[in-house]
Picture 1 (cartoon, rainbow, N blue to C red):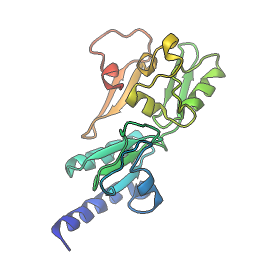
Picture 2: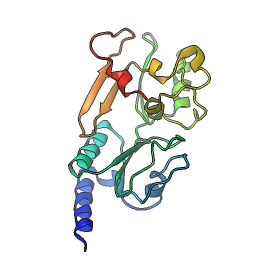
Picture 3: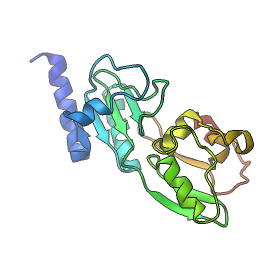
Picture 4: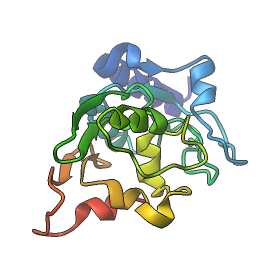
Length: 203
């Protein structure tokens, strides 16, 4: 067995020990999550896909990839047309489609706390029950995710009147490339203290 293959197998065994059944190394999910809706394709299959369901899972996966110096692609629904979610050969794909919970809706402060894999239209329908709406409405609104909207600063027809995704995001929970978890912004509409890291990460 070549030394590179042996090293990859050892690294994969470590990842599986850390995240268990969330790690996919073969089958349709491996192929499906390695590409998005663009015309671009990966040059080869990824080493594995992590079907993350929590911030802790994403952090663990990124820390593992950082230790082993592997390229990482993060994806939601894969509706993007720019190739932003195309995987890397022998890299790691982190899918956020299982991070799909609307954690809280605060109609008084007009805020919602959601996970990255929540479908855009589902969030809009949920907040409409409280007399609110979620402004970004890209053409893929029924299948795209909030995380994807944030990654691309998505707009839609309503952006002329209500702004793009950046204008609708008050705070973020961000996982950096080494697995460090960072909180930006605050659950207030007016928050002018310090650097605007939230806007830095949107788009």
